[in-house]
Image (cartoon, rainbow, N blue to C red):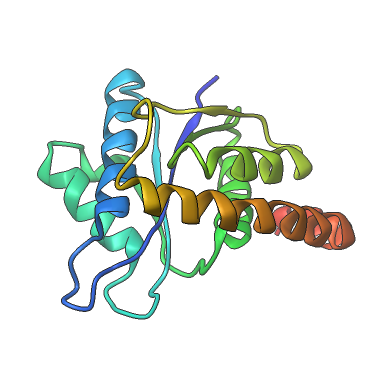
Length: 170
């Protein structure tokens, strides 16, 4: 059975260009797409502080690197990790796929996989660059943010699990 490649969004710069983090996550997704040539690629991320949507920038980068546009599914409404996971889980269930290949930075993978697991969707880590991805100070800030976000998202998903699971079926 097929897995969906799920690429998590990141910031878009004020000039509408993808941030280095977004480019890096797309590169992980591009590698996963090469490793799984029949898998659909779920690009997740809406419009943040600056447009266009993270998902549309991902799609443009992927297409520019030869990924068939027919493989791409864009989620342009999600604004955070929990919304990304819920949208991807809904898609995975609707398509009868096995689970998610999570394409994001190493510091973000545990939280994304925890959320998929809480929603009953199997996941596995996609390709990542070993070591720090980007400047060390950025990496440390993101680790600190994840340290706070993990229990927060876990509490949210536990408190609203029934509703979230019900929503996955619609």
